[in-house]
Image (cartoon, rainbow, N blue to C red; front, side):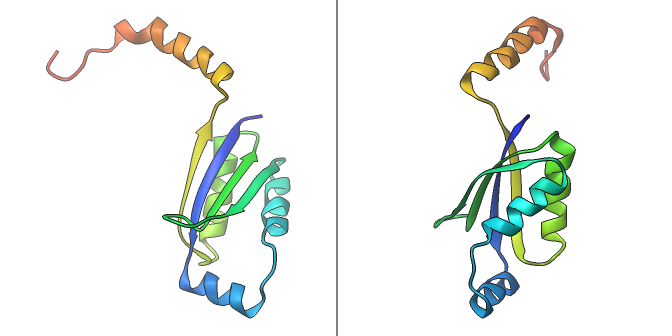
Length: 110
């Protein structure tokens, strides 16, 4: 199953909710992932440019986007970004495909 990494930052409303009822948010995130047949791998609260990092497996990219939209729709986050991740070993197949089709693309001005 594909792996996705999601970065998110809480909105003011999200922070207010966390202060009103502090609790571990990994349970609700895990339950949401399970709704689409996915699985939570890791959940971290972070410092810096993002407040949350979630590593998950979901059946495909449309599921990952739908989850992000569902969470963003609550107003609890001010930004959310989800990216696909490959293991180094799995990415070899991607590089092989790129090598096979590389000559078919004409760059701008070419």
